[in-house]
Amino acid sequence: MPDRILVAYATRYGSTAEVAEAIGDELRKAGDAVDVRPVTEVDDLSPYRAAVIGSPIYMGKWLPESQVFIERNQQRLREMPVAYFAAGLTIEEDKPEYLRKAEASMDQVRMLVKPADVGLFRGKIETDGLSFTDRTIVKLIRAKTGDYRNWSAVRAWAQAVRGKIAPA
Ligand SMILES: Cc1cc2nc3c(=O)[nH]c(=O)nc-3n(C[C@H](O)[C@H](O)[C@H](O)COP(=O)(O)O)c2cc1C
Image (cartoon, rainbow, N blue to C red; front, side, top):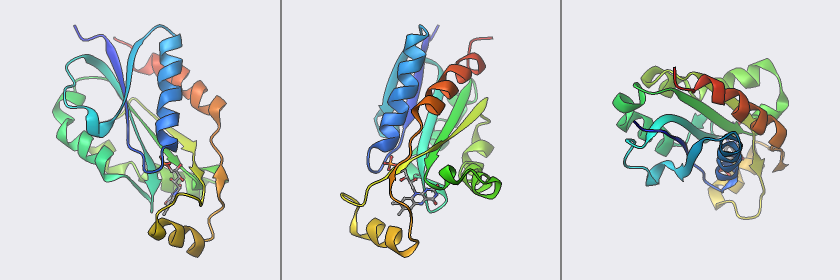
């Protein structure tokens, strides 16, 4: 019987990888066997009994690699409990219309595999290190830069999600 939990993520600048690590850490502390890995490095789902899959939001959407991962593995994922999380800067606004938009970033993957739970977290943008295109977009939309990740919210969600992806 597979007994591990997979925490798989996409990231462009690394901040969502750290969110995934914090989720994995919390599950491990609670006693689970966990692998935290980029979606692009997971080929075999047979060791896993549950999966937590996430992506940052770019222009209202998940990064394609997380979507492709779910598409490619949808058959197997439908047989296990799955939870999704998304990280984005607009989530910090804490306004219903922003939250709805953040939720909408997961519409496609929700249709492929229904999640037992969904987490929405604030993200991080630092202008240094952004690609030219991303820096231009950030300037154009006058996005507020900074690290808005709320670690206690991430950890609290990980603790709560543990119950929702527990074996029946
Ligand atoms: C070009 C660009 C577009 C973005 N678009 C969105 C968006 O539509 N909604 C949102 O909530 N956050 C948006 N963000 C913020 C990112 O989701 C946030 O910075 C995230 O934490 C980045 O994760 P990463 O470091 O793992 O790539 C955008 C950031 C950039 C640079």
